Length: 513
Image 1 (cartoon, rainbow, N blue to C red):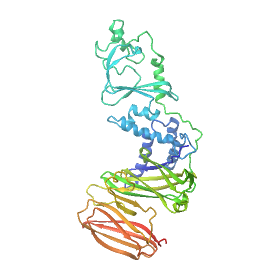
Image 2: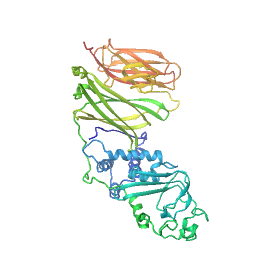
Image 3: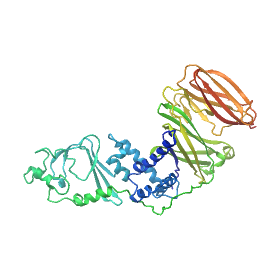
Image 4: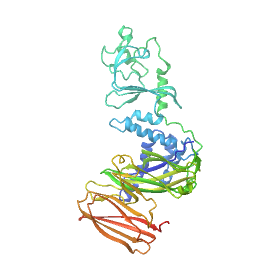
């Protein structure tokens, strides 16, 4: 069984301010799910049932049930059918767009329903073409066309050929039931003749008198294969337009309870940094305490590990991106106790559009099988062009300069710096707490005010202001003078015309001796 597990990010555009707008956006999101996301795979019965739903809760339950009914491995956490469906949509949008989104094209529709063909006979430029005997033989010139061959399609048939033609030479291929629609010389007198037309046994006019819906010339040998029969072609075309059959009809009840997991405590934080005016990097950091992991002897050492798999979807569940990671902890013989006192931490940078998202993370211990799921709402900020702004305030246990060789792929890299977040926000008096953030669209000079206060009393423990070039701020603050306890850090960035405040909570404990 696959060790992969899932993480889902459900992203949306920023929520409008009025209640009416919010309601309309939510309704629009559900409507788009039906008319776009699952338009090609939802059955008539399901669409009818959907139209009878009256509340958002019912629609949410319907969506969950919809995917569960199609899950080929309902006993596992991932739904391979759903993941593959959104991969196909993403592929269609990338490869079949032609003035309209790729998912709306004929090729996109067939690809989303049935997946990649076993063979593709592609003629993207058209050109010279030798007809097969079933189409009359002889040489002609064609429009761009593709023939997709599927060895088997459930509820469609065996050795299925699906033909697409681009008669406008615009990149928009359309599904055709006429195998001779690709002939670019059909309407040109005395050009592109079949063998029978060349010898006078037939005329080009006879092609337009066919009663089978094609413009093919008389076949060589007098008969065509069964696949050319008009009723066979109509049946194939009709079956291609039907949603794929649901294999798991035992999952009929609406699922109202959530799956519970064994304990595998996971800590997560997300920090936002500007990339462009329309995109933001969300640094997702995941951390585990090694003492919560199960070790086993392998290859002469003690090993523990966690598997993660991530997906990004929009509010209407359209696929955006994916990531996966296996974390491994190796402890030499006799060092398991020491390794158990440490942490395993990993980070991935996700490019996201501004707006609200839901983050769901699940992980599995590869030895014990214990799992955990973490959820949080993300509010990805918008960094407007020219607007004075700041990134997330990151409390780190490491801020170091990277070499030129390391900047390309180092873990925790932000520009030319390595910034490792302290996910728990817990430090000891013996440590220095790293403070890191970026400032955007500021004047060359300004000042930053730092204030650390005791959460329980509000009493200031540290309070100072210093000048800054208002670009990237990276400080290491000694904690030896802070008494054990919980604290609130406030950072105010002032460029002379405007001030921005960022806050973060942290705690200080006695140093371990």
